Image (cartoon, rainbow, N blue to C red):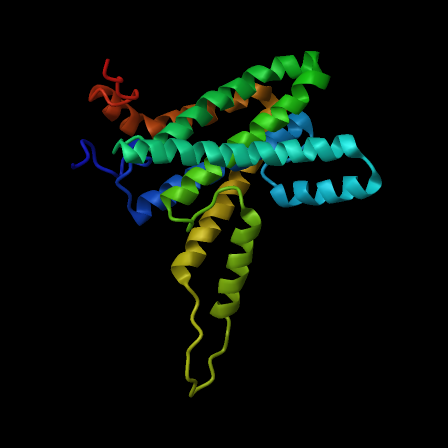
Length: 257
């Protein structure tokens, strides 16, 4: 079924009808949001929430040092990230089996709501830091897992938005190929995948730009910085969600009596 709007419009970038360009545009937007949320979250609760490598290393360190409360906290954060990814898988597969155009948009709609919850936690963190700061860390880890799984499924694992280590590694590999001097004659010529290099450079740049603006926003305006991020996400998911809503397909089908 053809899209009722040109797929180049941002509010259709989460549609199930995909293209490589739409994947890249969505990936750049989500990388920006992830960078802003990660940096802002650090200023809010003093912890980066997309860095699962660091969290797993922290589990090992705290375990050896006998700091079991910190071990439990790090494991809970990892579990929240995994839970976010699981939620995306459940929502996307549910939507795809029912041929919904909003199958990919639904997890991001949930992320939109959770970002607003994160903003509402701001005042509570200052008043009850011992209770709400750990909950905020779990919420942010859940959001990161949710979002990273969306773009992974959308792009068939070609694009990730929170896994910067892998992106930078791939950039290094392609740059190494790019400057490789091919002696002639050679059985196989070493060539860089310039398209892959451009994609990964764009994603890293978007994550960095989001981190700078997110940190600046939280420094100057606090938790209200999450509102523009939620608005951007809301725009990205609006097309498919409204399409399914107008066609009476947003809710699960009624069970025959």
